[in-house]
Length: 176
Length: 322
Image (cartoon, rainbow over all chains, first blue to last red):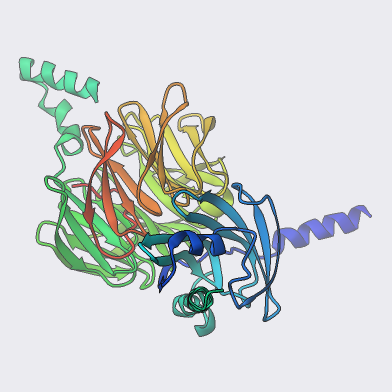
């Protein structure tokens, strides 16, 4: 018993330290869409942290905490993966909220330390929605493989934003 | 600062203590420019502080992040983690004069006040490289904790500190012997580390525990912990207060160094990162990574009083005012 404990301790001591430092260069993505609908109508569709039904890639949302800071949600994607997110702040008067990803498999979305904000600005009967993200690439440590490097991570996030914003425009301009 | 001014006044009156003031000349003369590393823009913006305008942009490939200045502020030492190099920029002539390999992931950088050495923290090999920037060579390598990021040298040049991010600790290193004297546990994921003007206390911005640890350097004891905003990045000190950039909150927290009470939270641009006080403690400069601006905060009014457009993805991680 004692010997086994000593051996396992020795094994621990000999095991190489696994360091998982994120990439050195944080990436940023900003995508916008102009929608032919008033800002309050657009905000009513996207402003609830607990409702992502406007995004075609999201199949299911389970969350708690409403729209208070530190509220959480788990998105199940149509592709099957999940993303866990936490609300950092919500400001309905300014029509914006900020959130971060607390857990995601890089195979689902190749990012680390991801934070984001989504906001609506009105101009008469028209609106502009802006979705911004800041994140490190999916691959921890140096010298990433091509599918998890900075460019691949940016492309993946751009795809998520573009897909959501374009669908939102289509839905709202169709009168939905 | 007040003490130094007082000393100077006495010196001028007595006209006999040139040596005493000499050591603090570089640290006290007014700054006129900010050198901002634009990581995604691969450049160094030169901002004129008199009118808060970008006056030059020097191309620096390799995703520049960390920055330190030579004691005379003529040269900037910039880390380029993507190309694994240290880049030496002649700030007066606005050109890159040298670049050479340093480790696998150079990030934080600091310059020694007198011995001519530059220290470079390596994010991936968990070491500090001691660099002779004139020769373009690494002269020693010191093993520290996991993923060292921020670096700071005591004003007397006796010690330097690294924030060992993934070990939740700082290392205290003897600059004469390049020996790691001790490791001090701080908050979670310390990134930036700043030492006060007396060389007595170090302040770490702890990214994952959303607080600042205050370490008494001589004893290696944490003497205070102050909660700040979300994802703090780095700390500046001015007039008895600490100023902390909070990346996710898009704010700068201000706390009193005696009471350790937060006295203000200032809204700034998105993802504020590198932060430094001018030597007089009049203004604080903050690089806002997402918004591509350098902001100026007035230390008296605790409000944003100016901003300059810079390149894409400004980090300015280190000492960037000259």
